[in-house]
Amino acid sequence: MDSGVDDMADENLISEIKRKMFHLLGLLYVAGLYFLPRKLFIGIMLGVLAAEILFELCRLKVPSFNDWLQNNYGGLFRQEEKNQFSGVVWMAGGVLITALLIGPVLPAVTALLFLILGDSAASLVGKRVRGIRWPNSPKTLSGSLGCFLVCCGAGLLLLWPQFDWKGILITALVVTLSEVGYLPLNDNLIVPLAASLAMLVLFNLRPFFLSLF
Image 1 (tube, rainbow, N blue to C red):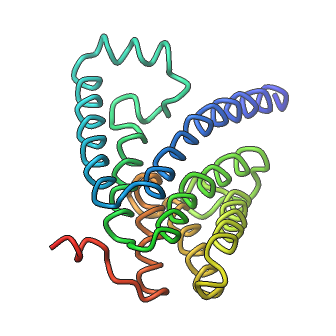
Image 2 (tube, helix red, strand yellow):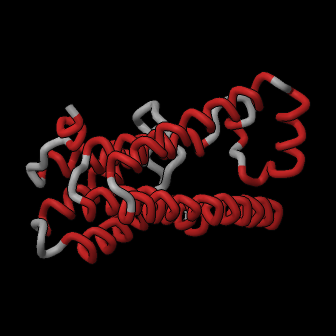
């Protein structure tokens, strides 16, 4: 019985690794945010989000297309995403929100890395180490610790000493807690949103979208 459980856990870990490898494509968003003029990047992200929503609506409305995707690329979808929007839509939304909220490039890029690296660490460490779970949540304390440490490392590397180290650590903690799953929002949206809002407050930043008007 234990061997069967371990085999299933290993299969789940392998599937999660595949998803997180795909998740790393989000680094393209990081590159765009870093190198492109912000208004151009926002325009591109609006187009990307619209295209992804259209694709997902087609997938959900055409069962044969959805079944084909599940059969051929099912490892990239979570079970609950078979009949609802997948994480790619929510990630595009999270990237767009970050671009609209955070003006300075490095904090904006860091918020996206919290999603790409921190959320991946939470999933992979949590499934590998397992252990104690958060109350009323499938997430583990080990996964949250992995997320926090990765976010702290990325934040300090990119933002300190230009930004206060205490604010960086608090932002990493806010991101970690937002990823636990108590809020009814997809991780790909809630993590960059939480990071962006925390940075606005802790670093006393002016929301970028105000400069568009």
